[in-house]
Image (cartoon, rainbow, N blue to C red; front, side, top):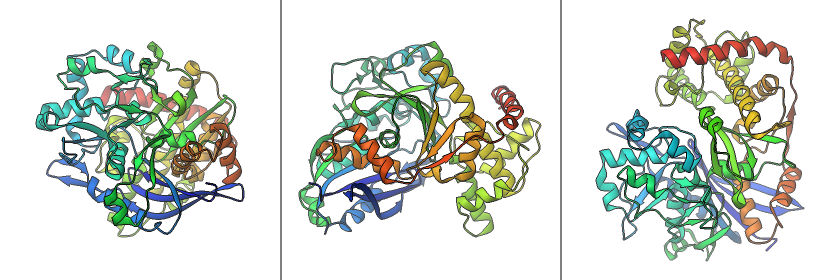
Length: 500
């Protein structure tokens, strides 16, 4: 098996990759074989994922590795979004995109039937309108025929696993993002069971909820149709840590328990790995979350808006200027600007949905009485400084609940952002270790390596990662300079809560 290669299908909110992974010379090697946009499509007033188009891209990637000796395939995607299939396995509707506006103001309607406290006590999940619970309630209100026709609900990686090998199951880490799973129950392996009582109180049927399986389980063999289309053989499909953040955290090259992480991409997932869920009043007040990890671990974390705001601004600038901007170029522009001219509350709901992001930033600054950033460099610096201060804000809260950390590991695409990484070290006072960049794909491959007994266990795999990929360290610089801006940032957050 040591000469075998594994496939990681890594789907993010902006792009997807088919990655080839294998061990060579005592190091893990990762090679991208196909990159593509994760197709979203606007139809009238609704935003969907074009799941068939994404699957077509996946098959294109699989065709390109047909001449390799493939020992396994795993799929990771973003969380919360789901699809429904009928009894014949036919997709009933394109999956709604989590940024579709149908969930605006939906949480208040849910809380009128089931209290916020009851939902949190039974799930331990932070409240966001994009969570599966609220999406499915919106489906019940607006398109109830989808639920009545459904045989099974499948989260995005579950759907692609189903199309690859026919498995109808939900992997634990992806199911844990839904706010429909109780992590305290231990009736099944892995921990947790669906909160059917909450769903029933909301008038949501439960017949379509699939069985939950742990990471590392062999789901099945590539279907005959896929084998004929791609030229691959009877390759097993594994349930890896199917939620991309869980997969990225699996790949963090850390040891001991005095470390935290930021999985940095469209979202910034800031957290700490713990053994048992933390469900108490402080966690509810601070809106932290308890999501599933490998071997029943809990990813205690906070969802932060992340690079989404910057991505949307970049898209707007490229349209306006009819040219492309790399994030490295935008970072250089930001670095040249004066520090702390303007700040935004990056987690404010006004930045959640797409469209006119530059104007939203300027509007926020106007409402809060700040200098209005105008240039690309000014706006970029505003975003990056605000993100670093948001990290500081939530690290302080996280440490007060879950214990202190000495090192902050940043993994994922955002770990390449030198300006933000240094800002993060300086604002938080933590040593920052950046890398690996392709943490989600690496974690995907890692679960498969352990499942096939090529690597002994999780800690051995983390050691393999630290020896295989470059890691860049950042130490705090001029930390005191961040104190006054931080106090300003806290005041701005309060003003925004009252006025926006």
